[in-house]
Length: 195
Image (cartoon, rainbow, N blue to C red; front, side, top):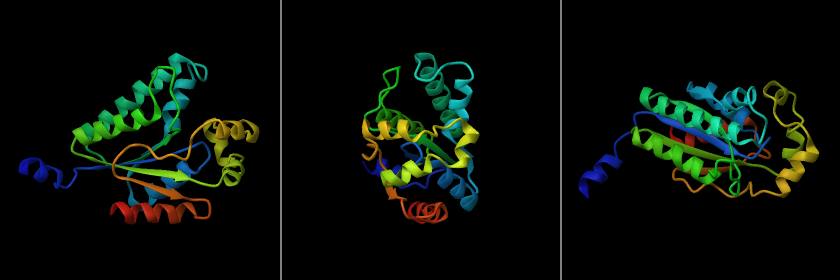
């Protein structure tokens, strides 16, 4: 018992900051600000998603399987290299991919991969008022990564999914960024996790 306590108090060798939440809540913008503030490597879910979309259509088994396999492979390489990283993840607590993987289990698997490598996974759940999210979906920056830019589709998406429930992971903070600048949110994250 003492041995495991001693191990758990050890300083992590590296940090992985996972900023998660629904579409257009501001994950990319906040992660980019945090990356600039703390100088961690930055990769976001569209790096992988856009690669998979070059081959497969949205909502197909092949796309989901490729995305998940690459995603977990990238995390294993991060762990192997022991590097500090900021990343993003689109999250719905009731989502199940075509492979049968749920969003909560996806994040728990990332948490497990990082922990096994003696790193620390820090989770940030961004939420905002629905009206604000529907405004943000029209932002110019969303064009760069083939992101959803249709308010009608997003409204239906928000109405039919649970995007407010936090993931069942440890070391987790929820931030309502409706009225906070991305820079301010990045500062809150830095302070909270002592980065």
